[in-house]
Image 1 (cartoon, rainbow, N blue to C red):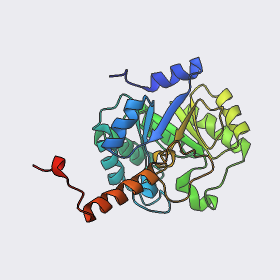
Image 2 (cartoon, one colour):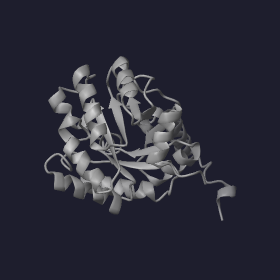
Image 3 (tube, rainbow, N blue to C red):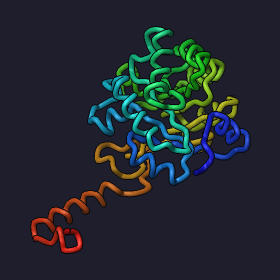
Image 4 (tube, one colour):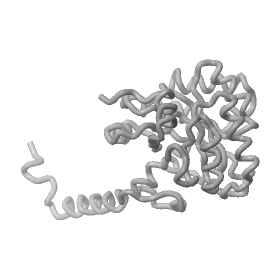
Length: 262
């Protein structure tokens, strides 16, 4: 088994210039495959609301659902680090509630760190959670839980706000920060200024690492695929072909054959 990836691994990679790799995962089977590939980090993302549950946003996802998916990802016992998203309204209201919910994602969901969205506005929550001994990954720029406030999934271009948020997240104690949907020149500046690693998604090549939604990467997403996502395979098409061939063989009496019978 490969050496376990931790927050210290992230810092070493930042210092050495080695890129950090991350993808989302929501279940046991894909987690095992991801871990075999040598990926550094799995995000149990609230993107499961769209990829798994069929919602139009991440907002409906609950704490119980995040705990459930985090637990079955952790059951694969991967060498990569498991970071679990804090869902909408699990941290926005009160500091004490944020700490309790973050703790539940580790205690019951068996995650190893939590991720929450926001910059200066959530710095107090990040500080409290980290002081409770829970590693926190920040997330600034395009924050999907604020999709209605932002007027949709739009690229964020306010450089002063983004840079201020990045520094606030770092100062609050986050071990890394996701930069989503921001111009590459802003991501480059943030990456240069911060001591903690930046993980980009739609933020250009200069971030310390990259993350993609697994379904987009594998070509499993049959809906809208954002501009920043690259298909590294077309498993969706292969799956349709396999299902169709299976149905054909059943209808024609070719399956099961003698070799599949007892």
